[in-house]
Length: 116
Image 1 (cartoon, rainbow, N blue to C red):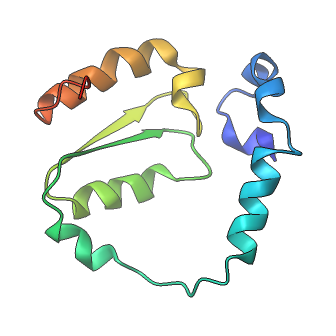
Image 2 (image 1 turned 90 degrees about the vertical axis):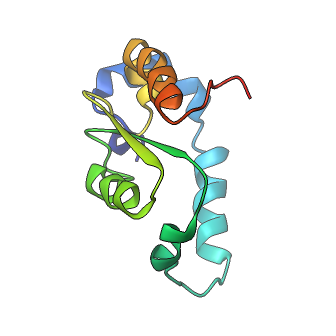
């Protein structure tokens, strides 16, 4: 399953110990499955949010698709969308130079310094 989170599976080995399948991923999966929450859609309410938002997505993210990130961006009135190329679900790990260079620029465009 971990392969789905990466644009470049060769980079997984650098972080494999941090993604022990017996801990975070299994717990997250079981928690979501067992929550018994009724599904509901609040997409229509997003236009009422009055806070800036930065949406970051890898262009090869198969977990939170770039198209979904774009739709979220279009639904939030004060948002910026940052798509990081050659990255999956963890762009700060796969493309740290681009992530740490571009996130502050986008936060500044939203009127945020990133130091709050």
